[in-house]
Image (tube, rainbow, N blue to C red; front, side, top):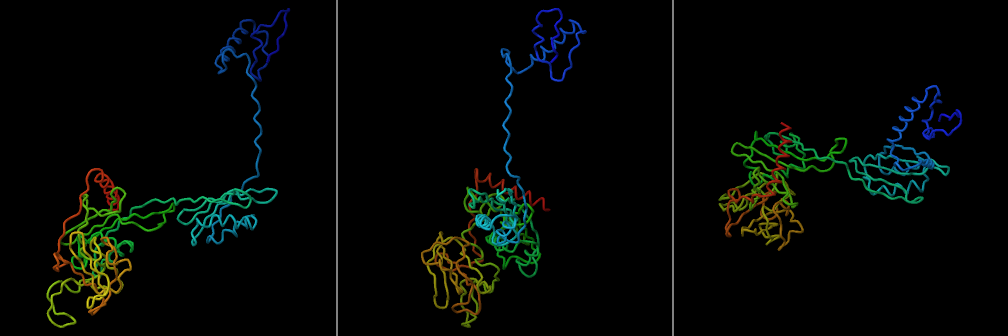
Length: 433
């Protein structure tokens, strides 16, 4: 601040008691009174823009902030371990005591995969007493993992970290070869676990043993969870199945109504579910049709009351419709037999089974597509196969010629939600063209 220079006595003007900005030089008196007035006016304008209230007489100096105490320096270390079993040893090698390393590893272990590579990020503090673990972040190959932190000396808490996964829709297209749908689908890149699901989704529209031929076209779209590195994680889910033969085509979409169990619908929102599936066993061939034939064991003409599906022993057998078990067990020439009575009064028979599942007992209710047993050759049989019968009004009918009514049709909010899911799948299908 420029000092007041007395010039003939008297008090200094009040304005000169305002502080000058720090670093200003002394103002020469030679400027004269006019210059002094201009400077004082400028200073007044400057201070009038301050946020200080007009009636404040002086601004109190700000108190100096207390110094923040500095803790020990932290060190981050990244480790890639061949398995969770190496974690305790790695922690100990990073400076923790044996007891602390084992305690931290024990806290992390329940959230880590028993096999596979583990990535660990350690946050450590170096103190006079040694190395202290501030935090451990460990992740599995699927990006799930755990965060471990100390709550007391030698005591650690663990918080699970969910996998950071995204769902990728994958589309595969192909044509039937001369061998089987299974080999055709695998060759097209369909994951093998989805092939039975695909066949069952279209089982109401196609008999894969009789109606599908070499050259027929198929398409599958499925959702595959992937991690942040793009690696597939977990099981895929079939979203769309389509098949086109020389005589007909069908395409179905997976959709769950109001959070219920997923079902299959055509593009208009009609359920593909019928009273009965066309074929109750996967991957089989029709070895004998319904009608009169020369019995292979008895040697004379006899009505063959059902359809025989030849398949290897142990092949799963499915309930062709919702129903209640009315017979389960051995029955003479029929071998291991299951009889179901369906909601519409029809009955289905499953003969010569190698094994009936334990839960399939008389009075038990089974759902359409639920496994009830395995293909075998018990009773009067010349080889492993399923003899399958359908009875309407207590009389046998040809299982392969029977037609049943279509399923329910979505409406309202359910139809709108289905349309959005269908369109989402179709966009991915179009992008894969």
